Length: 462
Image (cartoon, rainbow, N blue to C red):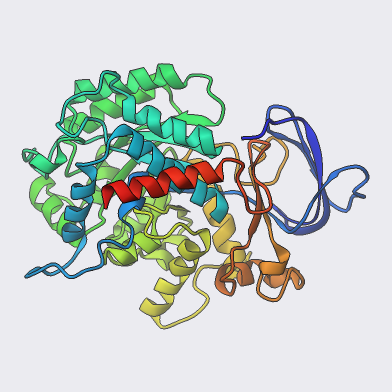
C-alpha cells in the first residue's frame, strides 16, 4: 500500500454532492482527508486523474471466507428442496477445514477483488473464532487479526464486526456440532471484544463494531448485555445483525419470541442510525415504516439473496418512506458493485412489472440515485467519514476507465446509468483509500503474491 502524502488532484469530471461537475480540484491532506473540493478550476500543477471520479463504495456486509466456495454450491442436493438451509451445509464443510493461513489468504484475495470492483471499505461480519476442533487459539483474536492483516495488506478500510453466536435457534437451542468454531458465551465474547478494542485503538482506517449474529443465535438478555457494553465503551460503534432473511426465521421468531423478528427488535432494542439490519427481507407494511423511521441502515445483498433464494426486500415502499440502505457482497458469490446495484433495481422490476423504481423527484437517474443512496447509507453503517467527495470527508474515491464505459465517458447525465446497467467490461481504473493509492491502472502492487496464495489455498481445499 502506497504512502499518503498531501496532494492535489484534478478530475475533468467528478460526482460531487451537487451532481456531476467539471474540472474539479481535490486537495488531500497528509492524514488522508479532503481539505477542499472545488469545481470549474484550472488544473495547474495538480495530479491528473484519468477518468470520471466517484466516491468509493462501502461494502456493509461480508463473510470473506465464503469466497472460497463461490460457484461450488450450485448442484442439486439429493432428495432435498434446495434453499439457504441446504447451502449452509456447504458453508459448514468449508468452515470446518480452514486454518489461519488459508483464512487470511482467502480474505486477502477477496479484499483485492473488492478494491478492483470499486469498494473502498468493508464491514467484515466475522464469526469464525475457534480452531477446527472448537478450541481457542493461543491468541483468542487470532482469526480476527488475520482479517486485519488482509485489510492492511490490500489497503481496504475495515470495519470489523466480531460476531456473538451462541445458539442454533430460537429458545436457546443447543448449537450444532458443525457450528463449534463460531460459538461463544457472552463473557467470552466481551473478553474478545475488549481485546480487539485495545488492539485496534488508533489504527488508521480500522473501525471496531459489534455483531450479535441474529435473534435465533443470540438470546434477548445477551443482545442487551452486548449492546450495553459496546455502547459504554464507544457510543458510535456500529451494530450489525442478520434479521428476517428467511420466511422460516420469521415463523420461528413468532413461535419463540411472540413477534416477527424486525418488529421484536425495534420494540426491544434502541435501534437507531448506528444499527445495520442485514437482509431484513421479509417485512410487513408496519415493519417497513418503522424500520425507515428508525434511521437504521438496511444492509442489502442482492446477489447473495438471489443466489440463496431468500426473497426480495420491499425496496420501493422503504425508499418512499425515507429508508436508508447500504449494499454488501455477503457470500461473495460475485464481487461487483455494479451487480449489487443492478439487481437491487432489477429484482423490483421483475416483482412489480414496472421500470425505474429506485429514484425520486430529486434524482431522476436510477444509477445516480442508487449510487448516492448506497454510498451515504453504507458509510454511515460502517461509521466511516466518507461516502462523498467533500471537504472534511475521507479521501476514498474511484477513478473509472472512460473507455470501458458503454458509450464512453461523454453524455454526463447518463454516465452512472451506463456504468451500472450497460457496462460489462472491468471499468475501475484507479482506487484511493484514505488518500493512499491502492489500485493504479487496474493493478495492486502486491497482486501477484496475493493471487498466488489465494489459488494455492483453493487447490489445498478442493
